[in-house]
Amino acid sequence: MEKIFKTNDLSLTAFLLTKGVNLLDIITEDQSRFIFLLSDPEKCELLRNDFMNNSTAPAQELFSKREMLISEIKQRTRK
Image (cartoon, rainbow, N blue to C red; front, side, top):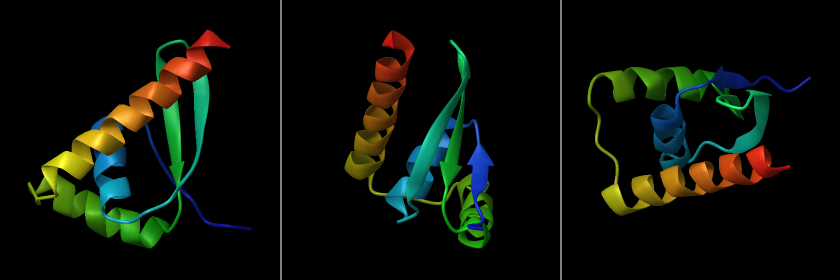
């Protein structure tokens, strides 16, 4: 069974994607709550600490990942 990292934090998820973690799925709990499932939980934990300590990431890529996630969420709420 594959280990996964779960979060409902959109900004953290965009940061993790920017740092090379793979998005496995997005679970819809209700119209306004989503859970992001990501690969490599050990790496995610380390990167979450970096994120909480104001680590940097390329702005253009970070915003691109964030917009991709928002687009995916909007598509799921239309279904």
